[in-house]
Length: 367
View 1 (cartoon, rainbow, N blue to C red):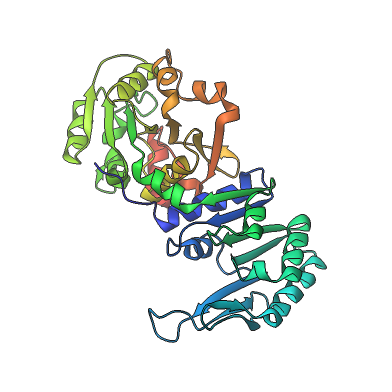
View 2 (cartoon, rainbow, N blue to C red):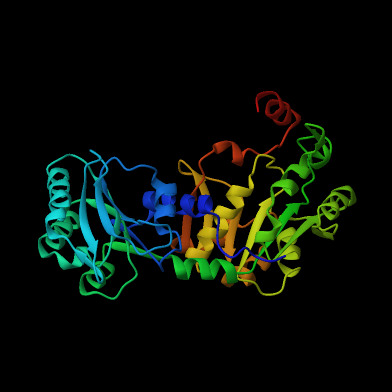
């Protein structure tokens, strides 16, 4: 298996939306090299902002240098030229009066969130506009795209202690390089189900096959099913997933066998086998979250309720292998709550797990 070169736009957008909810910084700044997709990602994460300023270059001919740069108010749609190309792109100071008025209007409103796409060298050449942006940052919450340039004003912005700065070049490079293994835990005895629930019929296929189909194997370095059931192992192998067959009694055994099936990796995902509504999007979102914060435990939540799968960074390997009895990954999570990042999952149905025949019938009849 080989990782993709970068997270999907939708997965990266999910991570940004969750950060806006859960990180302890006031502002979020995106930066990165030209063409990496900063504006595309911002739009995917936030949609059309209610309040903000959007700049865009006007190209007279596709592929040619821009003739000018326009600044547009998100709330009214009004636009003004803030940059014009002659021998080089130079600021049009009068055009920034539109941005100044937008900021002043917002500062006098009850609004809390302002979006700016983007801040670059043109903005840094108009002192009055710089001052207005700084006041905005002091009083409101701002999500912004910063051009990746070495200018005094951009450097001041990146150095703000109340801002989380995300460099897409670094994030995407880590995503491409990271190696994560997925342990699919399928060793339970299904006591409440009265038969092997993993093989129960779910819309014409065994229940566990839904998870195999959702797992985006190309995004993982490796995946392994740990099970006591040869039938489940055969299904996994049909999907190209390695298996470990065993007869040990405890959940801790399953985790240890799964982790031990991999060499040292950058991360280990623990995934239960009875969540048929998990999507590839959620797997990719958790992988993108780990790439952004590679030393953090990534725990999915929906409206504050945690669920599975959980993604552990490489430093957790020994502790995961040391879990005893029927304890699971929560032992490691509880020991390191200060190193947990929660990742919001939009649909609570993905956390639905099948424990009884009634659960399964409800699932089949309602979804």
